[in-house]
Image 1 (tube, helix red, strand yellow):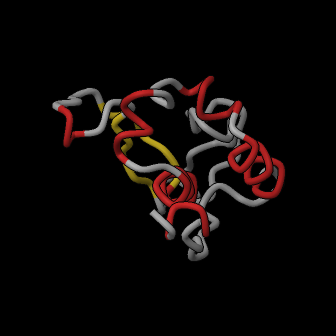
Image 2 (cartoon, one colour):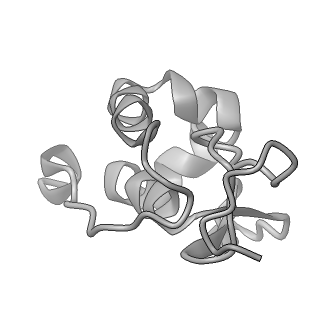
Length: 103
């Protein structure tokens, strides 16, 4: 199997909608583990890192605990547009959002 499997039958990332492939995959808890979240979802590592660079654990618990709510946020929408044409296994570091650093 190709690590950058972009075939139509490949599972899709629940955040960006691109095929997951087989490399650079993480698991995301919509309700953070810190707050007893148990359900995990496979997600691209770069998408997972983006979520956690933008939101605190409390923000994820209170407001951004669904895929739709995450995708509605401007920073995430911009990220999804940027990553849309990258291959499934694409990864680069994600800078921490300035607004989160100030907290």
